[in-house]
Length: 199
Image (cartoon, rainbow, N blue to C red; front, side, top):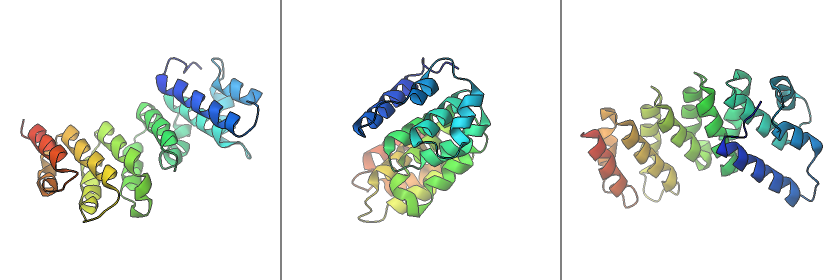
């Protein structure tokens, strides 16, 4: 299986190789095998599900299976989408978009609207905008409403909601975008989004 032409795959492999090296370990042969051109789906699935596998092995396996359209990658990619490490979230969102699993939007909406995990909601929010699914606008509206509270520290998540709603262009977002206009961090983006909705 050859994912090497995918820039996000190359970025992930470089990141994981650096993580292993920074931990004082030599890069194991299994890493090179999973990152190589000829690895098959059976080996990837084994790396994804066998007990005791390191996180890097599961991440490579889930990513490559996702790019191959293998639904066995779905649950692992959703877990990575909500990881505390933003770079892992980016890779997972990339693979989920290409996986095309019909469960993805529902899972992303659940992650984005889980207020206990709001610190990790940025990538689920961006993924919802990319997916353009029926779940996208209601979830982004819900998250943005919460981010409008005075002093809310997760303004980047709110800004991503505003931008996503502008991209989606659904008139159902007009009311919340108008409410966001006076917000010091969201106002300009909300005006831009409303301009898109008016076209």
